[in-house]
Length: 353
Image (cartoon, rainbow, N blue to C red; front, side, top):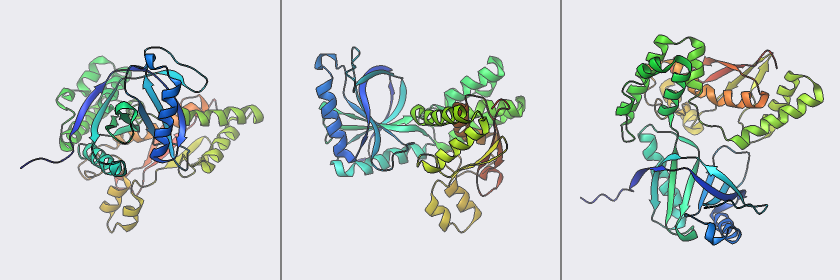
């Protein structure tokens, strides 16, 4: 029988120099308009590859796409609108969209569904690459893979040393991109248990929180700007933290307002699937609807160490260390891995705040 399922490929993209601009785009027509402007601004002789659009998932934009359009170039371009930057190397799952533009959502569903079934998570953006500047035909969709295993090895070595890190990462080479979610889960579970056996609680936090999603730089820098302005105006670090909390409460990019008690900020994640969470009839159904991680949400009863949840704490670590410019420590207060109904983290700010 012929296999008509979409063909999804794993690709390694080299780092490249790209020229482009960031803009709020309303719908797919906006992507086409932005690409036409980009083509007019970048000299043809400097273009060295196909154009692309990067769409951010974590954003304060209420309507439209928080997007960057760009194109690989052989030399820098800067005309006041277009700027040039280095795009880092990345691993992607790639799918060529074959249908009309109004069915592209189905292709995205297939691509992200495939990644979820493998227990693979993305960085907080996706990419589209276009053939001959045409957003209607020949669109390649790219799921940008978050290199969790590589980050685990890097930070285990930084915190525990190379020898202990090698023990932690034993068998990692056998977990290919095509490994099943069960294979991936078993390896991660064992690796976290090996960390538990040799690391202090502070070291566990440091390693795992450093494996979290990469928070968008432009987004988190907004917190820093609010903090610095309030600190300058008040001379009080905690009042500046409150200004950041006020900003987060008013801005759509941050979710529910955290609460502060002294130097401790308590943050609770919202459910991944609010509708399923509200309709759930059992604790197990609620936990599955709540958990964001495709690696564990179907295996919450299989004994993953709660140390793994320090990965989720990295989201808040990034926010507050950038905002205040000082290190923080984080405690797991509640976790669905422990049978709780939510995941809550206590972020302790530096005494030097």
